[in-house]
Length: 339
Image (cartoon, rainbow, N blue to C red):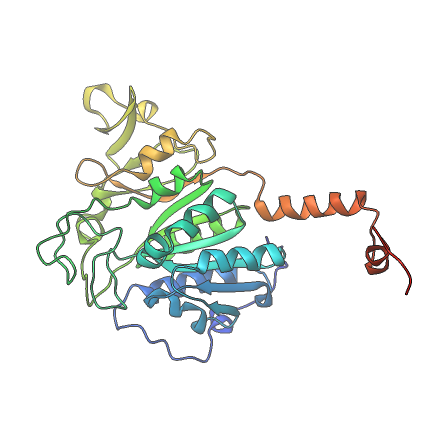
């Protein structure tokens, strides 16, 4: 990870001279603003940042950042981001992708960057649709959705991104909402400071082809009762009046109301984002309305050795033991003769 140096920037310093060409009202605008704000607060020289994207509306992102960037090919952002980080571990690499780009054609690359724990920050825009190609269902589209490629309703079960990440032995998973700039900024900063693959799912709205897909949990009137922001070391409480909570009953999570049946905060599950065993994290990541509130914030953050640091360490050890220290040593090794 690039080390902080307390460089003083404003968000304007991180904006490129390119016109932002997302639809008016698109959730991508909020994500861009939040990430720029997070980078300002990190205090890292902007030449240390590299933004890598694949294909899709989200993948225009590198053009709008006054940093290094790479607009790659469909589904291959994970592979290219991996190469950038391993070749130059001092860079802070951000992968910007969507639910189609990362989980369909890029699915194999996605699970392996997570498995390898390469120190890359993956921001996955989830609008549950293919927006750039005009409204086909994606790997996260809910069952029954009617789209141009599912005119009678999709019959497929969708991926749950958090469960997919944890199933690939992921060490960091968080979730936020595009319009919640404060929460998003905190989550992006936490992802940036984490050493290892960090995956942030952003519930993002496509105003043209899937408008309002997240409204059942994000509308102002209901969001306090249908979402919960997790904080490490604190009991899991939610609701407009902070009257509800989550407790562990046997092997299942249960929504309870404080004050009923003698339940107090002491009975609630205390969130431990650093617990190595992913069991509780898996359940929290998979919570869905209406049975549960949807979990936001950092759900899992368990540090482990990164692939990039391991490979640097391995190369160093091989160099120490190798009798070949330069090109001349190589040319004069093995069977040699003079002509």
